[in-house]
Amino acid sequence: QDKDSFTYTVTDAHGNTTTGTILVDIVDDVPTAHADTNSVSEGSQVSGNVLTDGTADVLGADGAAPGGAVTGVATGSNVSNPVSGNLGGAGIVGQYGTLVLNANGSYTYTANPNAVTANAVDHFVYTITDGDGDTSTVTLDITVNNVTVTASDTDALVYEKGLPAGSDAAGNSEIFNGAITPAGGTGPYTYTLNSSATGSYGNLVLNADGTYTYTLTKTYDGATANNGITTEQDKDSFTYTVTDAHGNTT
Image 1 (tube, helix red, strand yellow):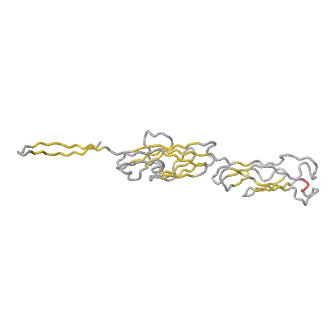
Image 2 (cartoon, helix red, strand yellow; image 1 turned 90 degrees about the horizontal axis):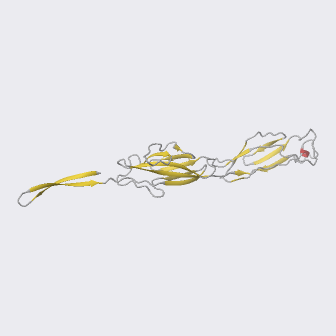
Image 3 (cartoon, one colour; image 1 turned 45 degrees about the vertical axis):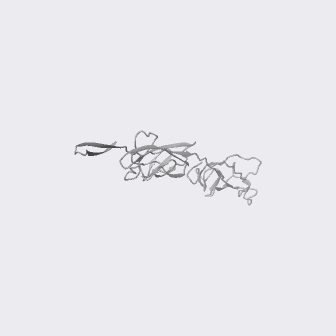
C-alpha cells in the first residue's frame, strides 16, 4: 500500500495549538485477466483477442503497460508465475500449431495439417501487465478438431483384346477412365501419385482434377492377346495421396 500524509494545526480562541496528521492509505488497483478458449480445424487458422473475447480482461486504474497490455506468452498451463516475451513475429510453436499473440491482445493460431487423430487441446499461458507493473497470468486453450479426408480404393478393368494384337484393336477396351472421389476436409483437393506411373502391364495418368486413365500396353501372360474368360485380379497397382485445401491428407 502507498500512503498520502498531511499535517495540520488546530488553534483555539486563545491561541493554544496542537498538530495532527491525516494518513491516507492507497490500495493499488491490479489487473485481472480471464482465461480464453477458441477452436479450429486442423490445417486451418483462427483469430481472436485475449483482452476482449469472452469475459474481458480488466486492466484497472493504472491502464496498460507502456508497450501494450500483453507482455508475454508461453506454452503450457502453469499460471503461477508471469511469462514474458514471444510476442508477434513468427510466434510460438505449440503442440499442434503456431500462435502469434500481439501486445494489443490480438492473435492468430494456425493448426498444423494432419496434427491430430482425435480432437485435442493446445495449451498456452499469457500475462497482462498494468501501468505500474502489476501482472495477471491466465490460459489460452485452443481446441484442434480432427479433419478426416477419405478416398476409397478404386478398381479398373481393361481387356487384352484392345491391344494392337488383340481381336478388337480398334475398340479401346485396353483403356480405362476413372475418377477419385474424396470426402471430408475442404476443397479444392490436389492429387499426387506416390508410385511410378509405369506399371508392370500398363501406364497410369493421374490428372490434377482427380480423373485418371490407365492404358494396358502388353499382355499378361505372353505376346499374344488372350480374350479368354480368365480375369487376372490386381495385376497393376498404384498408390496416390489426396490433399485438401488446408494440407490434410489421405
